[in-house]
View (cartoon, rainbow, N blue to C red):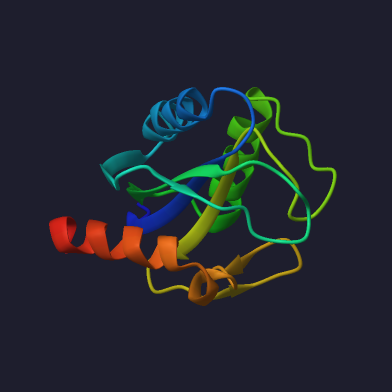
Length: 139
């Protein structure tokens, strides 16, 4: 039997009905096999990061407990993004839904398609705030 791990996943959206995209992601993540949604941070609006001109994002961090491995979880996240019309065109570009695995238990993953902890974690104050909020309520 696979042991469940605590995982932080960042949700972001800056196209279309941003709040609906985040709500869809929370619902779908909670329904993944072997997964429980333990908590969700407050939703906050942030300025876009990177060189591409675009509108502000709604961001939120969720804390899961899952038996899915990192690659399986990434595949599921990409599927959820696609359900909301996500198209991977340009790096740092606007998106209907962006799901990033930020931390996966104490694991470190260094692969071409997946790096955990997420390499941008130290550069995103809102992620650090959201993780601190979840850790305060779910240690």
